Image (tube, rainbow, N blue to C red):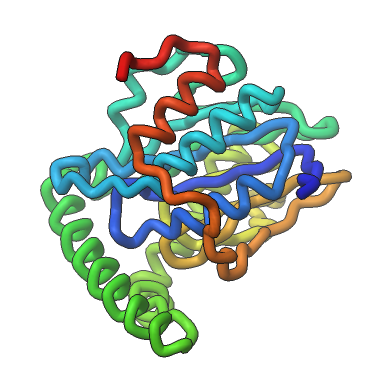
Length: 275
């Protein structure tokens, strides 16, 4: 299958390692594109959940596909978020076409774009990590419950539902927080003279122009792969939000995580472990 050529793709909040991660959809999307630049804008891997030891082979396939894109010439930038903040220890590290940075400023057709995850603007993240983790645990339970319900719906041939998305969109305080987050990002971007500010973090895909002190900035958010299955694409001078549909059933041979990992090592030209 031929891949779709894209100038730039921004994807965030896949949350590999959680029950809510829609790894099949993420894999289907990544396998369908050939971007010149791929920006992984935080929370790709959910480090907070590693203790639960949930890591199916489908999640390893997503990592493998990202490495495959890098091996084939795509410039990949990893900007860690709050759930994969462990990788911030490696900021400045480069391996082939893979670069790890805290934030990224790049020129796009003569305009300046500022990329970062967004958790630095979250007051609860800065001052009350225990409170944030408490909220995250509740959210994770909701996602787990949603996962179980969707398994039943899928078996019955019915459309999947997103409880978390419906609740978030219906709670006034959540809507107010999202608006405040977007406006704060735009305000800082205007003060720095940026044309675009591109975030993740709040799981709310968006493209809109925000005015501040008679100046405009385009605010963009790549959404997530738990609730929305969205990514940002820039191609031929235009920004778009791509929403991935239901992924086709994986009919390839079901390989375990160890087999996929060995293939990844071979693809990168690294020695494989002895069997």
